[in-house]
Length: 202
Image 1 (cartoon, rainbow, N blue to C red):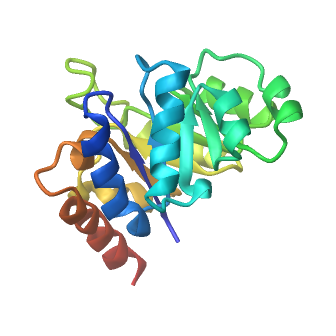
Image 2 (tube, rainbow, N blue to C red):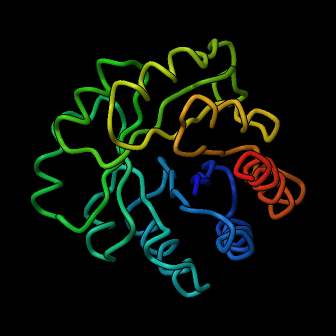
Protein backbone atom coordinates (compact mmCIF):
# COMPACT_ATOMS: atom_id res chain seq x y z
CA UNK A 1 0.00 0.00 0.00
CA UNK A 2 1.44 3.37 -1.00
CA UNK A 3 1.64 6.18 1.52
CA UNK A 4 0.07 9.64 1.56
CA UNK A 5 1.78 12.11 3.89
CA UNK A 6 0.08 15.47 4.49
CA UNK A 7 2.16 18.40 5.70
CA UNK A 8 1.01 21.51 7.54
CA UNK A 9 1.88 24.73 5.73
CA UNK A 10 2.65 27.12 8.57
CA UNK A 11 -0.19 29.42 7.51
CA UNK A 12 -3.38 27.98 8.94
CA UNK A 13 -4.94 29.05 12.24
CA UNK A 14 -4.94 26.36 14.88
CA UNK A 15 -8.69 25.67 14.75
CA UNK A 16 -8.75 25.47 10.94
CA UNK A 17 -5.84 23.05 10.96
CA UNK A 18 -7.55 20.83 13.54
CA UNK A 19 -10.76 20.81 11.52
CA UNK A 20 -8.89 19.68 8.40
CA UNK A 21 -6.85 16.91 10.04
CA UNK A 22 -9.88 15.61 11.92
CA UNK A 23 -11.65 15.05 8.60
CA UNK A 24 -8.75 13.64 6.59
CA UNK A 25 -6.81 11.46 9.03
CA UNK A 26 -8.66 8.20 8.26
CA UNK A 27 -7.55 8.50 4.63
CA UNK A 28 -3.88 9.40 5.03
CA UNK A 29 -0.75 7.64 6.28
CA UNK A 30 0.77 10.51 8.27
CA UNK A 31 0.21 14.14 9.22
CA UNK A 32 3.35 16.23 9.57
CA UNK A 33 3.47 19.24 11.87
CA UNK A 34 5.81 21.55 9.98
CA UNK A 35 5.29 24.77 11.92
CA UNK A 36 8.73 26.36 11.86
CA UNK A 37 7.67 29.59 13.57
CA UNK A 38 5.77 27.90 16.40
CA UNK A 39 7.28 27.62 19.86
CA UNK A 40 7.47 24.31 21.68
CA UNK A 41 4.59 25.50 23.87
CA UNK A 42 2.44 26.22 20.81
CA UNK A 43 3.32 22.88 19.23
CA UNK A 44 2.49 21.17 22.49
CA UNK A 45 -1.01 22.65 22.18
CA UNK A 46 -1.32 21.53 18.55
CA UNK A 47 -0.28 17.97 19.42
CA UNK A 48 -2.70 17.79 22.33
CA UNK A 49 -5.46 19.17 20.08
CA UNK A 50 -4.78 16.54 17.43
CA UNK A 51 -4.85 13.73 19.99
CA UNK A 52 -8.08 15.11 21.48
CA UNK A 53 -9.64 15.08 18.00
CA UNK A 54 -8.86 11.40 17.67
CA UNK A 55 -5.85 11.49 15.39
CA UNK A 56 -3.78 8.39 16.28
CA UNK A 57 -0.39 9.29 17.74
CA UNK A 58 1.29 6.97 15.24
CA UNK A 59 0.03 9.15 12.39
CA UNK A 60 1.49 12.34 13.86
CA UNK A 61 5.01 13.29 12.77
CA UNK A 62 6.65 16.47 13.97
CA UNK A 63 9.40 18.30 12.11
CA UNK A 64 12.73 18.76 13.91
CA UNK A 65 11.42 18.79 17.51
CA UNK A 66 12.45 15.30 18.54
CA UNK A 67 11.90 16.05 22.25
CA UNK A 68 8.19 16.65 21.65
CA UNK A 69 7.90 13.59 19.44
CA UNK A 70 9.55 11.51 22.14
CA UNK A 71 7.50 12.96 24.99
CA UNK A 72 4.19 12.11 23.31
CA UNK A 73 5.47 8.90 21.69
CA UNK A 74 4.37 10.13 18.29
CA UNK A 75 4.79 8.34 14.99
CA UNK A 76 8.10 10.01 14.34
CA UNK A 77 10.26 13.05 13.75
CA UNK A 78 11.17 14.47 10.35
CA UNK A 79 14.49 16.27 9.83
CA UNK A 80 16.07 18.58 7.24
CA UNK A 81 18.89 17.37 4.98
CA UNK A 82 21.50 19.46 6.78
CA UNK A 83 20.69 17.95 10.18
CA UNK A 84 23.79 15.79 10.48
CA UNK A 85 24.08 12.53 12.42
CA UNK A 86 20.88 10.82 13.54
CA UNK A 87 22.54 8.65 16.18
CA UNK A 88 21.65 10.77 19.21
CA UNK A 89 17.96 10.76 18.30
CA UNK A 90 17.97 7.05 17.46
CA UNK A 91 19.63 6.21 20.77
CA UNK A 92 17.45 8.48 22.91
CA UNK A 93 14.16 7.63 21.22
CA UNK A 94 14.53 4.14 19.70
CA UNK A 95 10.74 3.89 19.25
CA UNK A 96 10.56 6.91 16.92
CA UNK A 97 10.64 6.63 13.15
CA UNK A 98 13.12 9.15 11.80
CA UNK A 99 12.65 10.61 8.32
CA UNK A 100 14.89 13.03 6.47
CA UNK A 101 14.33 15.35 3.51
CA UNK A 102 16.99 14.87 0.84
CA UNK A 103 17.68 16.62 -2.45
CA UNK A 104 20.41 14.50 -4.02
CA UNK A 105 21.74 10.96 -4.08
CA UNK A 106 24.71 11.56 -1.77
CA UNK A 107 22.36 12.77 0.98
CA UNK A 108 20.08 9.78 0.50
CA UNK A 109 22.98 7.35 0.85
CA UNK A 110 24.34 9.15 3.91
CA UNK A 111 21.05 9.15 5.79
CA UNK A 112 20.28 5.56 4.94
CA UNK A 113 23.70 4.62 6.35
CA UNK A 114 23.15 6.65 9.53
CA UNK A 115 19.77 5.12 10.34
CA UNK A 116 16.94 6.99 8.60
CA UNK A 117 13.74 4.97 8.39
CA UNK A 118 12.49 6.75 5.27
CA UNK A 119 13.34 9.68 2.99
CA UNK A 120 11.44 12.55 1.42
CA UNK A 121 12.92 13.41 -1.97
CA UNK A 122 12.10 16.66 -3.73
CA UNK A 123 11.20 18.85 -5.12
CA UNK A 124 10.33 16.41 -7.89
CA UNK A 125 8.33 18.99 -9.85
CA UNK A 126 8.27 22.77 -9.80
CA UNK A 127 6.14 23.87 -6.89
CA UNK A 128 4.42 27.03 -5.69
CA UNK A 129 6.06 26.46 -2.30
CA UNK A 130 9.46 27.13 -3.92
CA UNK A 131 8.74 29.41 -6.89
CA UNK A 132 11.46 29.54 -9.51
CA UNK A 133 13.17 26.37 -8.32
CA UNK A 134 13.15 23.81 -11.12
CA UNK A 135 11.95 20.32 -10.33
CA UNK A 136 14.62 17.66 -9.94
CA UNK A 137 12.63 15.28 -12.10
CA UNK A 138 11.61 11.66 -12.28
CA UNK A 139 15.03 10.45 -13.42
CA UNK A 140 16.70 11.66 -10.23
CA UNK A 141 13.84 10.26 -8.16
CA UNK A 142 14.31 6.87 -9.82
CA UNK A 143 18.09 6.94 -9.28
CA UNK A 144 17.63 7.50 -5.56
CA UNK A 145 14.93 4.84 -5.23
CA UNK A 146 17.11 2.23 -6.92
CA UNK A 147 20.15 3.16 -4.78
CA UNK A 148 18.59 2.83 -1.32
CA UNK A 149 16.60 0.12 0.42
CA UNK A 150 14.46 2.36 2.64
CA UNK A 151 11.16 3.95 1.52
CA UNK A 152 11.39 7.10 -0.62
CA UNK A 153 8.44 9.50 -0.55
CA UNK A 154 8.10 11.97 -3.43
CA UNK A 155 7.40 15.61 -2.58
CA UNK A 156 7.15 18.89 -4.44
CA UNK A 157 4.52 19.79 -7.02
CA UNK A 158 2.68 16.50 -6.61
CA UNK A 159 -0.83 16.76 -8.06
CA UNK A 160 -3.23 13.82 -8.38
CA UNK A 161 -2.60 13.29 -12.09
CA UNK A 162 1.13 12.80 -11.41
CA UNK A 163 0.66 10.05 -8.85
CA UNK A 164 0.80 7.11 -11.31
CA UNK A 165 4.14 8.18 -12.78
CA UNK A 166 5.63 8.55 -9.31
CA UNK A 167 4.60 5.02 -8.47
CA UNK A 168 5.95 3.77 -11.80
CA UNK A 169 9.37 5.04 -10.67
CA UNK A 170 9.02 3.02 -7.47
CA UNK A 171 8.11 5.77 -4.99
CA UNK A 172 6.74 4.40 -1.73
CA UNK A 173 4.32 7.27 -1.51
CA UNK A 174 3.76 10.99 -1.89
CA UNK A 175 3.82 14.00 0.40
CA UNK A 176 1.48 16.93 -0.16
CA UNK A 177 1.23 20.34 1.45
CA UNK A 178 -0.63 23.07 -0.45
CA UNK A 179 -2.55 20.61 -2.65
CA UNK A 180 -4.49 19.53 0.43
CA UNK A 181 -3.99 22.15 3.14
CA UNK A 182 -4.91 25.02 0.81
CA UNK A 183 -7.64 23.19 -1.09
CA UNK A 184 -11.20 24.50 -0.98
CA UNK A 185 -12.28 21.08 0.26
CA UNK A 186 -9.28 19.24 1.79
CA UNK A 187 -11.17 15.97 2.21
CA UNK A 188 -12.15 15.92 -1.47
CA UNK A 189 -8.55 16.73 -2.36
CA UNK A 190 -7.33 13.74 -0.34
CA UNK A 191 -9.86 11.53 -2.11
CA UNK A 192 -8.62 12.81 -5.48
CA UNK A 193 -5.07 11.71 -4.61
CA UNK A 194 -6.36 8.38 -3.35
CA UNK A 195 -8.41 7.85 -6.53
CA UNK A 196 -5.28 8.00 -8.68
CA UNK A 197 -3.51 5.80 -6.13
CA UNK A 198 -6.27 3.17 -6.31
CA UNK A 199 -6.34 3.26 -10.11
CA UNK A 200 -2.63 2.45 -10.13
CA UNK A 201 -2.94 -0.29 -7.49
CA UNK A 202 -5.74 -2.15 -9.31
